[in-house]
Length: 613
Image (cartoon, rainbow, N blue to C red; front, side, top):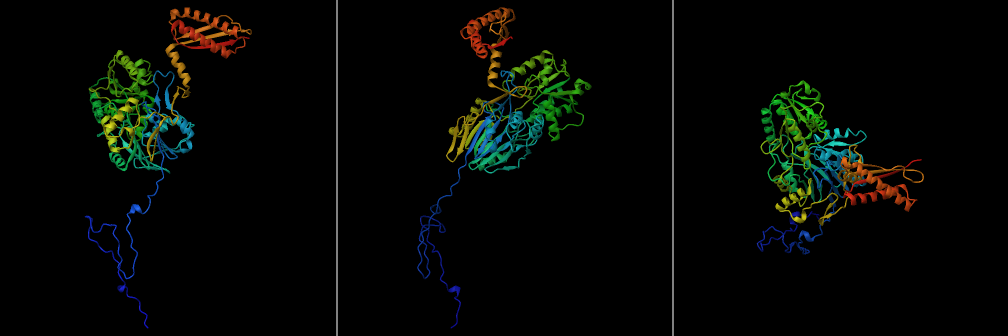
């Protein structure tokens, strides 16, 4: 019998019986009807199950994201922000704050780095938004305490950081340059960048990727639609918003200013006009780090046939760095050193100097005081302030202006008529634009005093953000973001101010209190000389500092000296075994009470007992 292969065409066909549409459903849409097999053998009836019933969704591991500041909240300066993604720490900026005059003997204020010291092994990298001192000035002090794997900076910030760290030869560091297209990858996160406009080139915002969306730090920014440098990267900003921003940290410096900030090009036109009108020598004071402004001043000077003489160490260093990167351009021989000032006629020179904020040792302050070795004011000099007073500096600036005018100089300040300065910070409408681009779920205003931060929150609320999703934090407060939402843990991280004096050493807070007390109430010191029997030899030497007018000093010294002897004898009689240190403290306490009761003053009192052998 012939063995034949079965003909496949004779096999029974399986097919799905098409049903007529029911309940207005399309014919091809899956439904829960029975699927019938019409082959010869009976088949199991299978009920169709929707996908969601087939099994659970895969569980996504929770990610812990923490956002906090070690500096930059409640002040304009000392910026340092931290984003933690699980066990990795991303640090943004390491700035310094210049101390006010009421913090006696203190030059700089920096954040307390204790938290970073204790968590050094978790630090993934440090990212610099731009090259201003309030963002890079704390780097040397940070690197003396904490080992940072890599510091990332862009453009002109790189040589500015290198110049700064060159003054600290013992510091080892790893500095890499990033561009706007770079993405720095880590185990739990990545960091990308977007360009912004500011008063210094190569300013950037940062986007840290998390499972909940991006944590974005805006950096310092404004929206200049005709900038001298690159345009802001609007495309990247809007794309971040579309992909999802879980938290936005946005600067708040100009949150109280409603008008749109002027373009740098408008300032260039103003300077050109002024330079063509002014006869005689021009002295311009501006921020050394305002590279675009420095370029405008140089360009206006060259157009009018004026050589530019640069005064100020920071100004010289910034110009050198900017020339190398082609941000400042000038024909050879037009930017000169200070020593060449004498060789040029006054009507053919522009002096470019530091001191726009009234800093005591800056070039303009010394010119105003008549103590500058190379520059003496002339009757036809014109001084242009191409800057805006930083809050708290008005008194020092006005003091210099009065001296300059008294010496016969003509002073031009920024005002609505002259327009010699524009801000590098976003006003209210620009802040609204940033919020609209990013569309954050949570919002943390940064980089400003508290009235600025709260005003920024009002702006955000006006755009529809929920009040419970806006957080005005203090340094050390932690915003914790996870699957359950966002919560604030108060004072979770150690964050305080560290004061540095002229020697760049820490100044203890108790020392500061004593200095304030001396400045406000004066100092009284009393020195006792005693023999072996603890008897006083002659009367104590009492000195007064900032405590009495000269005509009454002798009378007051005699009274206090007699009182010191009386207190000493009483204490020594009651307890002959008392130690010198305890005796000094008790004399100081009783002298303090005596002076307060007698004169209603609270001076700092220093008592010293010396034994003569």
